[in-house]
Length: 312
Image (cartoon, rainbow, N blue to C red; front, side, top):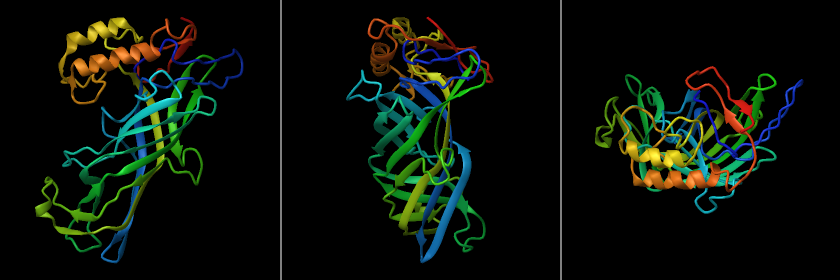
């Protein structure tokens, strides 16, 4: 885990002795590694299909599980935008990305958000089956969707490993309760097909396309671990004007897997990212706007190190 610093963005109370319950007042500007359990149900040719991934990691950055300010209320930490996406097979070049607008309740840690991935998507699901035994071997399952929607229900949790070290994660679904669901997915999916591995050409289908009736999907479990701070391009563990200046030096395509400067998640660091970073610095990294608070920091590059809370 990279070290995290948000200046006044997080307010945490710790005591010596028994571990204290940490209260997060702002989660904007953070990104997370996410693991989910995706369920897909429906009827195909009068046969019932039920598919379940079990716990699996979402694809790598960007849009894994990112929390940013809501553009309509950029200065209010209670309003957030969550960027995430559906897992897909290796042949799918059209990522199904969501921007979920919603709220974060600092008192309870609860997140509620909703968003639509506009347009028609031909989605290679993470599942492979033999189409009810009608194919000679397993093949990727593809679903045609129109304007799929996601409703997210999650909770920010702060776990205390001792009196000073904290690890933050976002959880949902069965991680919270046995009957809970982390996200409801409304796929609006009329067709399902089985394509040969290595192709995304719908005309080469092995089985289908067939009507996908009563198609439903959900994320039954979500576990997201804090990973990075958007915009900390100079690795000083703060969001400051220095990052706004520094981002101009890294304009160009993302080649090394370092997405800290790609705030709009389009694969290129450019003026649009610089504008977004100016906004983030003003919202959550500027002590002239919100005075006081604590600094969250840790040892960079040590995947086993959790953040350490200190005063500025």
